[in-house]
Structure formats: structure tokens, C-alpha cells
Length: 327
Image (cartoon, rainbow, N blue to C red):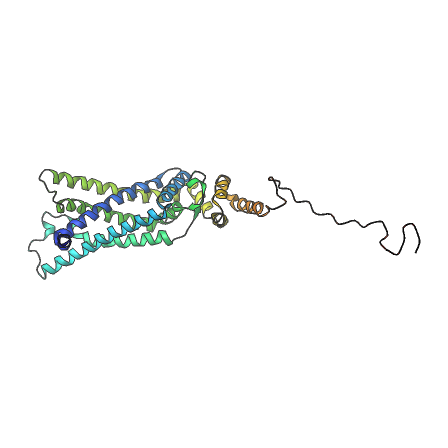
């Protein structure tokens, strides 16, 4: 264990661990970008169903969700901590001295000089982004083809709600460009830190890193710009968003989400076909279920027969009067 502690506290050890965590985060970013491309489907109803299926798949298992979130926090926290630590160590070792020749005029590229600042900006954005999605408006959604027909969170509506704002869309695209610059230098630097530095292969790795970063940054940027255009310029998208945000529709799904799963699945198809009637459908089902009792046997929905009042007897009730006689 002593050798491991020595390795982790050394400068090269910190750089290699930072490079390894960075590579894991780079792969996560690619997967996240591919998942977001579903927002660009031209049919807004299909995009809503596909994106909510994707988000439900990621969150349906609470255990796996917590494990994944913990892993990402550890990776991101370790990467950020080592980046700041190494930067401070470099400043401390350098002191007041500065390089005689500006690196900007040498072989180093521009992303080298913005690594720490772009990283901090991206970190702040991620924290804000996660908190916004977790604590933002919680819309409900139901579709017989999504999650088996149960009520789920409408992450599509939450996402397009933010991307529909032109200021946020522009801010999002700017952050994604910073992410591209950050990964551009980080990928090639990570390979060199790991000892993969070859006269033949290093130039190829650098070019592949550039292509990778351009694809990811443009993928996120096009998704944001395209989503803004679709939901603001397409009348079908506007109609779906207006209906999905309707208070009666949301309150009906909120009430339905508290019901048994079989009831949710049974009502998924009629509500999906007539979302404007969601409140009526849910209330009618509640009345039917609330009326089930002794008078509802075999599915008979007729009212139970009311007991008849006792009829008065025509016979005299006075015990002092004998039958057929007079008092």
C-alpha cells in the first residue's frame, strides 16, 4: 500500500489519475450527446415518447441510479480536485518567475491556456444543470408505449422548456463550445501522460481528438439550436406543449400516479388518445371504483335495490278485540 500512496501523491501519479478520470468523463459526454439527439425528431409526439422512454430507462432502478450518480460524482470530483491541485503546485513551484518565451508563441495551443478556466465554467454549469433538472417543474406524462403505460416524469417537456428560451439556448451552446476546447487539449494530453507518445501515432491521436471534440460540441450545439427551432416554429410542437402544461391534465395525471399500476396502465390508452379528457377519464374511473361494494357483483353497475318499507297490516292490532266481534 505504501507504493500506491507514493504513486498517488506524486506529480505523475496525479496527472495519470486525472487523465484516466477525464477519459471516463469524455465517454460519458459522448453517450449523453447521443441520447439528446432524440430531441431532433421531426415528429414532436414521437420525440416526446422516445426521450421519455430514454430518461425512464436511466432512472427506473433507484439502486443503479444512485450507483451511477455516485460514480460520476467521484470521477468528476477527483478530476476537478487534481486539476486545481496540480495548477496550484505549478504556481507554487514557479513562484514569481515566468517563462522567458511565451508559450502562446511556441508549440502549445490556445486550449492549454484556458483549461482550468473552462473546466471551472463547465463544473459550475453541470452543478446548475443537475439542480435545475432535479428541482425544476415536475411534469407528468403517460403513454401506453412508454414504461409499460404508467405515469412517468415528462423529461422531454422539462428539457424543451429550457431550450425554448433563446437566451438559455445560446448560453448552452457557448458552454458546449468551451467543453469542446477543454476536451481538445485534455484527450491528447491524457495519452501523453499515460506514456503513449510516439512520433507516428501522436499526430494521429491529436487529429482524432480534434474530430471527436468537434463532433461532440457540434452535436450538443445542433441539438440545442434545432430543439429551439422545432418547438418555437412548429405548430404541432406548440400544441403538444400547451396541452401537456394544461393544469387539468397535469392534476389528473398527478392523481392517477397515486393509483395502482394496473389502473394507470388501463387508462394510458384512452388518456393518450384524448389528453384533453384526462381529468374526466380519471374522475369517472374513481367514481366507478369508489362505488364498488356489496351491490356491485359480477361487474353489474346497476344501482342496488332499495329495501321496501313494511306494509301496514289490515288486521286490527288491538288485542282486546276478538276476531269478528265488537269492543
